[in-house]
Structure formats: C-alpha cells, structure tokens
Image (cartoon, rainbow, N blue to C red; front, side, top):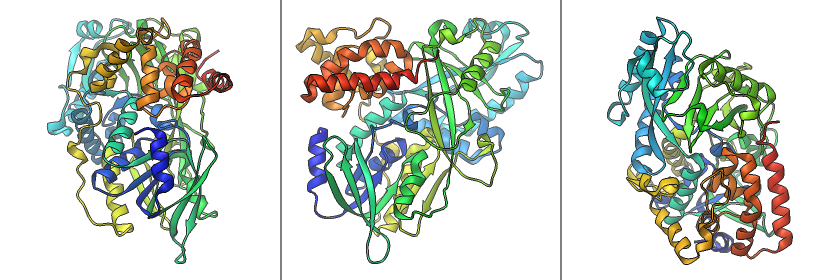
Length: 520
C-alpha cells in the first residue's frame, strides 16, 4: 500500500476504529504494530513524518542503561536488557552487538566499574550479549587505538546493542501496515470531539498535503506524541495540568579517524553527571549525549553552543586526536518527554520509566520510556486501551514477531545492510535502470535507487524524509546532504508527479533544516 491508498482507506471508513493513535514515533508506531497484530482496527495519524521528532535523534543505542543501574533502578535495567535481546532477535538487520570500553585512569576504577558492569551483564540473563571483563592497558589500546594514553592503566569491556533508529521505525511502519493497520504521515490532528458522556468519541484531522479535513470515530484514542503530549491533551481539556518536563539531548558526528576501531567508549562520569558515549556508527564517530532542561519542545530543536563545547571538551579528555568545531560534520538534538516530578530542575534525575495516564476525557496518554523498551511499552498501552475501549481481550504476540526486513545475515549487503531482506530489491531497481546506481555524493555511500525506493515503498514525501530518515545523510554529514538534495528532489518529483516549483520549494525548506545541523 502507498500513502494515497491509506488516505483513501482512512477517509472512506464510516464505522469507528477500535484504536486511533496520535503520533508516529517509536511509541505510537510500536502501539500500532501491537494493536494490529491483535486484530484491532487501527489508525495512526502523524502530523509530520514518521520519526521526525525524538525517535530519529537518539544515541543509536539499544541498551539497558548503565546509569539507571547506578541510580538503583534495577527493574528498569532488567526490563530494558530483556527488550534489547528481543529487538536483536526480531530485527537482526538493524540491531547488532557493540563492544564498549570504559578506559580507566585510576587504580580503583577498573575493579569498581568491573563489578558494576558484571552485574549489568548478569541482569540480562538469557538475553545477554558478550561477557564483561577487565582488560589490560595493551588490550585497551588495541581496541581503542585513538584513546588518550596519558595515565591509562586498563579498561573494562562490556557489550551493548546498537541500531539505526529511524530505519527501524520505517520497518515498523511497514510491519504495522502488513498486519492490517492504516498509518498516515503528514496527517495533523486538529481536534478531539466529545460525545454526550463528555468522553472523546472522534478525532478531526487534516491531510497536510491537500488541506482536506476528516473526522474519524474511535473506541479509544491514544496520545503518543512524546514531547508534544500536553498540547494534544489540551485539545480535549484546555486547562489541564501539564505532565511533561522536556529535556534536550544533543550529539555531534565526526569522521571515523577519531574512533578508528569497531569499539565504543563509555565515559561513566562527565562533569555534569551524565554518561557520555563515543561510538562508531555508519563509518563515522557519534559523540553524545547532553541533558538540558528546556522550556518547551520545538519541532526542529538545535544543539546549543554550551552543549557543543561540553561534548568537544569531554571527548578531548579521552581521545588522543582532539576534535574541534571544524571537525564536526553534523550536530543534532532530540527532546526527551520526561514526566514531571516535583519542581526539580535536574532532568537527568527524572525517571526514564514510561507512564500511562488517562484523562477525564478518556484520552489515554503513553509517554516517557526509551527506544529500547518500545515493544513492552506498546504491550502495556494496548492492554490498557483494550480495557478502556471495551475491546475483546487478546494476547500480545509481538515478543516473537519479526520486523519487516528481517534478515539474519544482512551484513552481506554492505552499505545497504540496513534494508535487510529489501536490499536485493534495491539492486533490482539498479538492474532495471543503471542511472539509479549513481552515488548521490562521494562523501556517503547512498545511491539514487534509495531515494526512489523511499518514495515507492517507504512513504517518503519530501527531500528531508529521504535525506534525514530513510537514508541518514543529514545526520552523518550535513554539507554532503545539501549537495545531494537537488538530485533527490528531481528523483522524488518524478516519483510523486510534482513540478519544478515543488522541487525548488523542497530545496529551500531542506536547506533551512540542514543549517540547524551545521556548526559554525
């Protein structure tokens, strides 16, 4: 199904849906997958593109959360480690094991972190990745050739998971559709309509592309809009007490020379009390993250100057080759939808557990949590929704549901391994039209066929969709992404039957977004 088929299906349906989900990030799409596999009629509406917000802006880790262990939140860590194992099992083309080293510069650090990380490994049980252990200075240098050697005594190695967040999300969208759900990006919810009993009975929404408005009834409406949770709640109850305390996390991307091996660095204590990572990702080095309380969430958050400086100075303490602002290829920020707790300003101390909240209007909100636990969050949410909407009770089946693209050995597809079982189909596009094999920019491995594939099979509607979330060009190298944009606009215009005016407006819009990823 393509987007126009789904728009038709959503617009023409007369009877109420069992479940309408607002929000197309990891949580909302996870809920759509779960609801559809249980046989509930499901509609998901996303005002921008899938993963436009927080879900494409993570640290790219599938992890239990070493920091939560230190905070004593053992149950969250155990749940996340179990879900980490399930994610790798269900989407091996996108979730892989990654070795981390904690470099030790004091005699006590090795044993201290060694014990904690051994416990971290034990808590994962049968879902465990590799074993954690203390390694010598020589072994540390072998695995981290660019680590700062001054005072280095040893290292502690442990294993966690890594993934491509927005690629997984797009495969989850396809999975939900294959299971019978209807999902629409660029469909903005404009109102929540209450019935005689003062509870929500329908949703009004607009197709952003055509401007046409629709009303869809539902047994239960789920608010999965992350940082924008309170805005949706206010559609039903304008005077509602806000529940979100937004926090910004930023990352910088450097070239591979800063972390030349296949091992990540974990810094357990930075000057602001956070854990910091430097990880190899798509042939680049990703450094992050920060945790800054912000007043309100925006659709296009930008890293603040102090965040950039903090990441550069922290990385310089641990890397032999010191990064500067001139080395940053791309910088991005995401907003965590943390749930308020008292009047504290320190968002790093707020729980990362998910919260399910039901307002008097009957609106069910799910928020908080983290990427790694999306499946478990969805299961919990749909269980509550079934009770609230008086739907027939059905068991959750997502624990062993393969995500679209599932392939146990996708690494054989090289740079297109993230497509899993779809990778050969992209090669078929090139076989049919050799021009689609052209690399879009020498700095990155993406080819023209990937833009065509994104438009035909992955619901991409804009240049930004293709360069930011179907490929990861904007996140890896903002200037290269800008150079790729004209060709992508041309390919998309051909696929979506758009004119030259559309192409130029797309290029203008993309260059504005791309500026936010560049550090001057």
